[in-house]
Length: 230
Ligand SMILES: *Cc1c(COP(=O)(O)O)cnc(C)c1O
Image 1 (tube, rainbow, N blue to C red):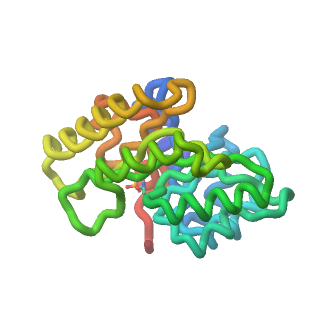
Image 2: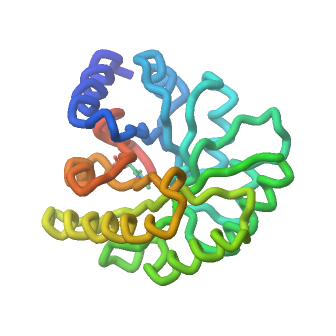
């Protein structure tokens, strides 16, 4: 690991992010030593994609890291990131929630652990079938069920989306713009003190996402360098 290069890339990324936007350093596939090195530079918010990987790394790293789960979460994997024993560290925010069954399971696990779990709903904004996420009407339905009290131990804090993987920056910008509009529209019916987060933007498109109103960017490659495997 090249510590000087890491510090340089981190400083460069941070310089592009306004203070009202949170930088989540995406550490999937990175070693505990790499994460520790960024922690030692002062960084605290890290994002992981795979439940078992998060569970393995968490106990090996400082307890005050704020962990974000940003990957696709299957119902049968919730136990790894929301365990019921209270000694295990929390996952600060789960970004990719995409259905009522998953919310049911999160609520059940949160009850067992006597916790409140914060989540974001993932919206399908890319014009690609491969990406996960909810359609706009499904998002509205889930928010309504939440307001009616279906998941008392889960707080829906906002929305998350991934733009199309394309060189067409105007299309990416439009996708982020659409998500931001949806977020602001839905916000009117939600508790404005709670429904505050809009997670959009990665290494290649964070500038566009920030310009369109992102509050959380998820950046891996621009900080840690190219990933050698996925
Ligand atoms: C891997 C990943 C990122 C980070 O991607 P980079 O291009 O490395 O910045 C962000 N969000 C999600 C959901 C990811 O899976």
